[in-house]
Structure formats: C-alpha cells, structure tokens
Image (cartoon, rainbow, N blue to C red; front, side, top):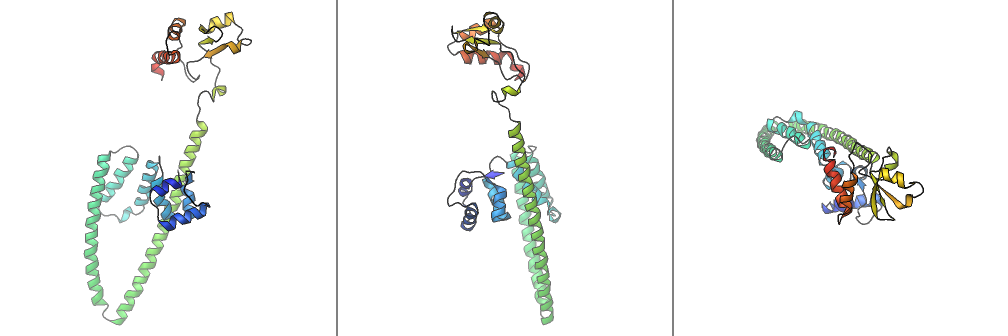
Length: 279
C-alpha cells in the first residue's frame, strides 16, 4: 500500500513525526512520489504508520479488515455483545455484505457500550481506591500495594509490546499482499494494440483503401490487391482484439457506415449493436 508525502501533509501530521520521515527519505519538502506504508513503518514506527493509513487511497477494504483484525485480538476482553456485533458488521461492510446504515447503527451501539463500560470502570475504580486506602493504612501494606502496582505495570507494558509486535507483523503482511496483487494485475494486463502480437492473428473484416478513399471487404482485397506488396495502400479494419468470437460488418453495412459524417463512430456503433450480447 502506498501514499505520498503530499497526501500525508494534507492530514496535518505532527511536526516531530513529519521531520523524522523527511529526514529518513532525505527530503526537505513534500512531493507526489509513491511512498510505501512499509517505508513509514521502518522510519517512524507502528503508531505513525497506522496514522498514515488515512492518507492511503483505494484500499479501504484492506485497511478496514486490518482494523477489525486488530480489534479481534482483544475481543476476549469485550463483555458487551454490542461491541462484538460492531466488529462483525464492520467486517461484513468491508466485504460488501452490510450497508452504511447498518454500519452506523453498529457504531452507535458500540459507542453506547463503551460509555456504559466507562461508567462501570469509574465506579469500580472509586470503590477500589476506597478499599486500598483502608488496606494501606499500615506502612507494610502500602509497600505491598506499591510492589503489586509495579508488577501490574510491568505486565501491562509487556502485553502492550506483544500486541504492537503482532499488529506490526500483520500490517507488513497486509501491505505485502496488496503490493503482490497489484504486481500480478499489472503483469496480466493486456491492452489493444500493445498485446496484439501475442494473440492469434485475426482476419480483418475489410480494408480502407487509402489511394481511392473507399472501403472493400477482405475477400475483394485478396482478389484485387496483393496485400504484401500494396500494404501501404490498405488499412486493415478489425472489430476488436481477437479474444472472442465476434460478428463483423457486411459489405452493405460497411458502405452505409462510410457514408456517415463520422465514419469511425458509425462503425463502432454498428459493431456494438451486432455484438451486444458478447460485450
């Protein structure tokens, strides 16, 4: 997945992170050169790389599914069904199986769940503080409380670090999959006439005779002209790249088209009409 410095700058990045990224790239100003999220990850770390995902265009599905993946790593801590439902809806929405209305409703419900949880946490914290104050009245109890707090902090830091490592690993995986898909798509891309030589030779439905400015069908061209010797006078006309069965123009249809003020538009329209079930 890629973005650009200009796209990142439009999102108003923090000054320190912006300077760090520019220094890593050896640049002093923003530009439109493609910039990989992996490069940002290597330069600035996970937090800045995640923030820069908002400056990536064309990969909303992958980014949304990555966000859901991150949330699912801690879903065992979610006790409210509304929060779990929100993850399911977000995943379905990313895959085109849920509407915006459903997503908004799930988001609102999850917000209500978070508000309820915050209230419960505040009340629990108040009760815990009161108990701790009574328990830690003695000096040794206070020491034990301090040691316990230090242990909890260490455990929390270790958990946060592990979660960060997992998120970084998954982000690298997602970016690699997106880049591989793009490379595959580009390598398989085939446009006419660039790939004409790689296709089976197709018989033209007729020729435009430049010298006399009129149309002749392919059979008459073989009869009246030697296509090898007179190639500079004959412009072959094809209906489409030889990728499928098609129906060309009859001589009468071609003559009607070439009487039109816009010859090529008339030819195209007639061919689309005759081959509409193959397009």
